[in-house]
Image (tube, rainbow, N blue to C red):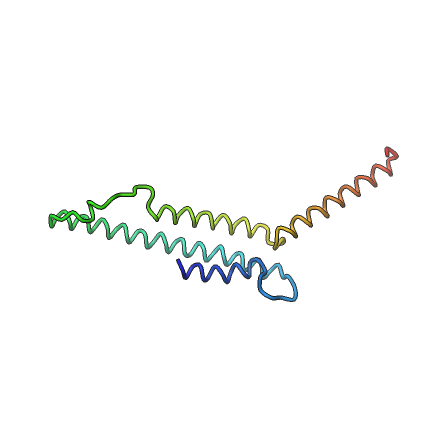
Length: 139
């Protein structure tokens, strides 16, 4: 997980334009965001693979215990659905959705710019509507 967080830190700085640059290049930001999404998918797959190996080892251990007459693994407390693997799955799914949403807004690297663009667009539409009303003579 620490390797994932280190890789994600570099990609987040690129995806949010936190590095020093003379211009805000949407292509660089898009590459950073797609990279973050792909790295998240890769580490999610890796996490699922490791968990399947752990579950397999626990099953083999329980079978060996039964054959040898021990019960250390089988007697341990069960967390059922509160195991760490389920929390990890939820966290990774959240991150995947985060990257998908972030990539969808690639041309707005920050929420402030998205809001500013929306307000400017809205003001232009209102101005055009007022001009059309005055041309029609209904004003």
